[in-house]
Length: 439
View 1 (tube, rainbow, N blue to C red):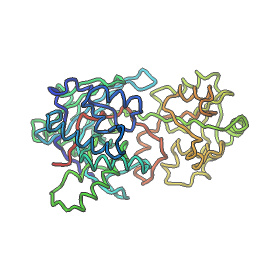
View 2 (cartoon, helix red, strand yellow):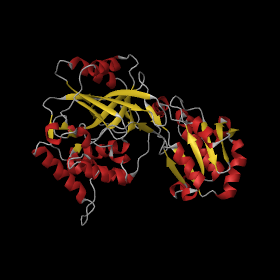
View 3 (tube, helix red, strand yellow):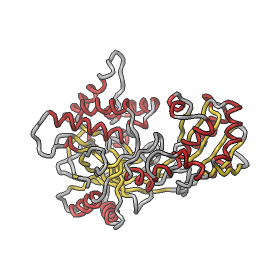
View 4 (spheres, rainbow, N blue to C red):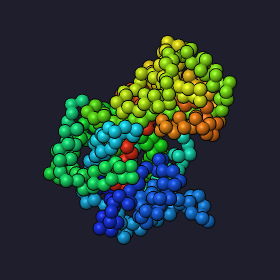
C-alpha cells in the first residue's frame, strides 16, 4: 500500500515578496510562450523561473537548469523562500467555475510526500497515461540541478467512509494561511497543518485514508517517472541517509468518492481529409455509429457544453463544413478492432474514437505522428478551425469527459490510456509549496 508522510515545505515569505498571487504560476506543461513572458515580467521571484526557466541569449540549453538552481539557492539565502519549522501536510481548496458552464465547484485535497514505487503490477502507485521522452529529460535535468519538487503530481484515492472529506472540512473551517485568486478566477486556499500540532489527529486521518488503497496518478506522469530515475541515481551514491526525501515525490492527494472532480475532454480535429475524405467519413459513419444530424453548429455545441454530462457513453459530436451530427457508438461494431488491453480500456470513448479515426478517416498512429490530428479543449475553437479550414482542419470530433472511475479502472488493470485522454481541472498552482530533498 502507498506510504505517505508529512514534510517541511519551502514557501514564499509574504513579508519579502508581498502579494503571493504575483509569484505563483500554473504548472510548466500548461504554460505557453505568451503566458511564460507574462509570468517572467510579473515578479522577479515568480516560481516560473524555477519550474520553467527560460533560455537566455548566448546560453547553452542546459544553462537554464543551472541558473534555476542558483536562483533557488539565492532565494533561500535572502529569505524569499523559507522552510517551515514543522513537518506538515498542506490542505488545499480550489473553488472554480467549470469551463464552458456557469457551474461552480469546490474540490479539496492535501499536499504530502508519496513514497516512490516502481510502476509494475501490484504497485501501490498506478499510472494511466503514456509518457514521452523529451518532457522527462527536461524534468530530469531540472530536478537534478535543483533537488526540489517545484510542482506536485496529482494522486487519486478513494475513501468511501467519508472520513477524509470530514477531516478536510474541519481543517477548512479555520482561517487559511493562503487565500488568492489566479488569472482564471480560481480561488486557492491553503492550510499548513503540522503533524505534531493540535490538529495532528486530522493529519493522521487523512494519511491513513489515502494509504489504504493504491494511488492512481491523475496528473504528473512525466514528473513521477523522472522522480524514479532521480531516486535511482541518488541510491547509487549510497549516502547512508535513513528514509531520505529523494525516495518520495510531492503529491496533491484528491479523494474521488465524496466530491465531484472535473476532467475536461480534449477534442480531436482531423486535418487533410479533403472533400472526398469528408464525404467518405459522412457516408461511412453509420458503419460504426447511430447518426443523429443536428440543426446547427450552436445545437451541436450546446449538446457538449453541459458540466453535468457523466461521459463514458460512447457519444461524440461530429462537425464538418457540410454540417454536423451526434454520433452514438454501436459497440458491437467496434469489438473486432478493440484487441488491446482489458475491458476498462476497451470501453473508453477515446479508444472507440481511435478506432473510428482509423477506419473512417485513415488516421492511424503513423498519421497522428505525422500531424494529421490536432487537439483542443475548447468546443468553439475546434468548430472554428473546421469552419475556417484553419491549418487544413476538415472535421472536428467532440468528446464527453472521461469519468474518474473509468480512469482508475484502467490504471487498476495495468493499462494506460492514449495521449490527450484526460485533463484534470483546475491545476494546482506551482510555488504554493515546494518540497526540498533534504529532510
